[in-house]
Length: 149
Image 1 (tube, rainbow, N blue to C red):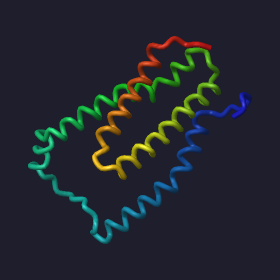
Image 2: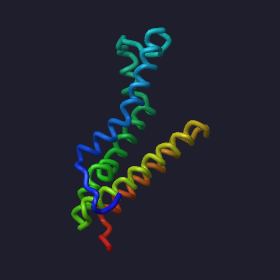
Image 3: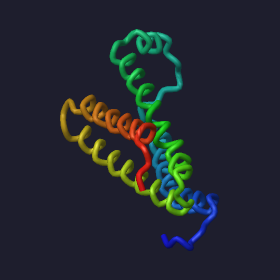
Image 4: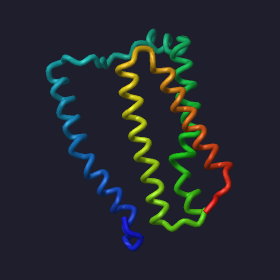
């Protein structure tokens, strides 16, 4: 992206969402096909016993705590990194470029961690822990490191 190129935020958002829409449509079509065959595992009946089990199950509680704890630094990195970089004195274009690199790394990390957890037995917890450490480290760097040009 050249420094002279300017695009409105809504244009970028429209381009991204427009590219994702056909993929989403394929997923909806596949979901409707499974629903029509009644071969899915979805149930429409609320089971109170399952809900109670979820509240007292140690694994479910630890998973909730882990997801909640990961959301705190992740919110800082994803939501406020653009504002922080912009306040540091970078142009809007440079800020978008820096943010897009971070977003690309996030997508790559998700693909790698998903591949690991699908192919390596008992790797979900170590993979999630590594991701949480990376996210917390990134949030700490954004919050506490001084800007160096």
